Amino acid sequence: MFYPDHDTVCTDAFSRFLGEYFTNLDLFFFVIHLVAKADDARVTASKALLTGESDPVKREQYERSIAQPDVMLDQLKKHSTVQSHNLTNGIVNAFQRYFSAIINSAALKRPDIIASSQTIKIEDILRFNKYKDLIEFIIDRKINELSYGGLVDMERYFSDRLGVRMFPDDRQRDLLRLFVEVRNINVHNGGVVNDIFISRVGAVEGFVYAKGKTFHVDMDALVTLSENAMRVAMHIDATVSAKFGLLRKAHRSWKRSRKVATKVEPEILDDGIAQ
Image 1: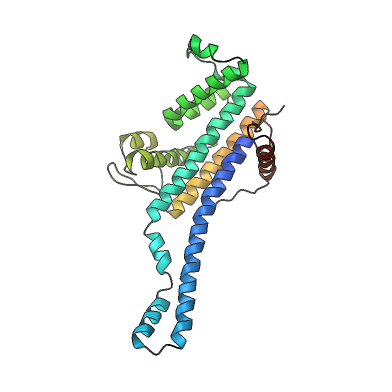
Image 2: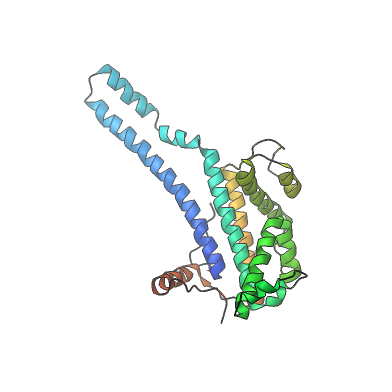
């Protein structure tokens, strides 16, 4: 799996994404480690007990246990689809939260990027005493709107409003679109490919799926898709922060800042914008 360095220089938004990414992967490998230790302990105990055992029935049980060193791991593999769903959903959800957060940070620096033909009710305006709060409300509403439009709308918004190219190449676009839509069918359609999935994803080299059939990514594919999502986010982070003057520092520094903020004043968190 792709593990970015903890000293990666980034915005606060990316640092939070990175933290969620690490958490998802760490939990997965922690489970594998526990299963491996359980198998190892079982085999070690069987070998020790076999040495002094004279009962043929028990000796046969111990020998069978020794001959099958990966019983627990094999059981875990039976749940590979669930593991795939959990990792896919967790990483894609974290990416989408990052996407929303980086737009929010850019828009707070340059509110004009959210200008559009959308209308705002007078009662909504009157709810706010501060201009900044009104801007945040409009930003949140726009981000929610984009999140329902899929990756195509997100990319268009990045290009038209932020003036940023979201993907360095078509392959990255195809892989991220696939990753996002796999998450969507996991959540909304039980992992079964539907018309929306087909229309949004199209053909992606190296991946085969069919309407009405379940589809999930294996470990090799998950490595490819998660690394691609991380690299797309790294590209976005560097480009958007440079254009809009967003504060960047090492991921571990952001983590320390958040811990201090949580201990001192839980309601105050760094929004990642250079002052």
